[in-house]
Length: 296
Image (cartoon, rainbow, N blue to C red; front, top):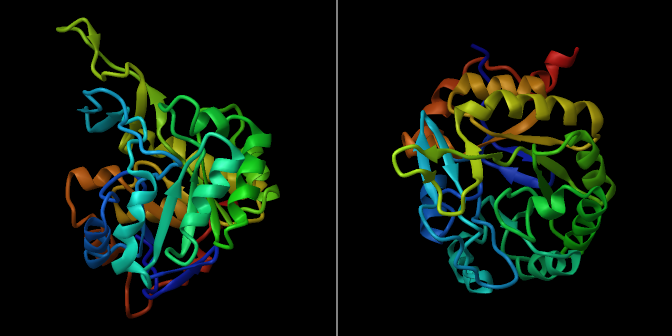
């Protein structure tokens, strides 16, 4: 397997300890959990998505683990502005705040809260199970463009997380780039559903939800590939990554860094174990030579 040189990296305006990032929505709900992921080897961490008003989310069951994949419909529960206190202990750490809103103005407002508190923003324009938010806006290129522009006014690097539940993800990557995005993140969960034949009803309280885990890795690789071809800004890969070889594959498709989420359900030491295999202090390759090499 390809091995990389270890050490800090600068990706789309954010200085990371390595190429591995905690994805939004998992263990990003408190300052303590974010700090713990950094101590366990994550090169950077993304918070739970924070919006303009507190939300309790959908009625349960909200999460189901099925055949090694995770199906969830949380509904973007969050404490809104009260979350900011969780970041006090992390002011100099590679923390990216995931934010959402229902309009460009709301994105701009929430983005402004995080100026001086985090290293960057990740715009959630891709959640498939929160009506009026996420993919509801992220499936309209003009909204992607305008939400990005509004968030950029906070003066922080802006990464835009895109939904795979569209005909052409490249179109939305270009819209984010036109709005001033510093990077695009691909992908959020894939819209999905399972039904309990025993209970004769959906396994999730909300009915439909988002699928994550190894099942969506090939979809994520394809989306990273298409965005790398279409955009002039970095692509951050996300979706089903669970091994060092997965990281290398996603980077060869065009990802400058890679987010890991659902693999945490198997082990909270996933970052250190992947990094141990991925990096070689005595002669690893420069990541610049790997990113996008499959396109050559």
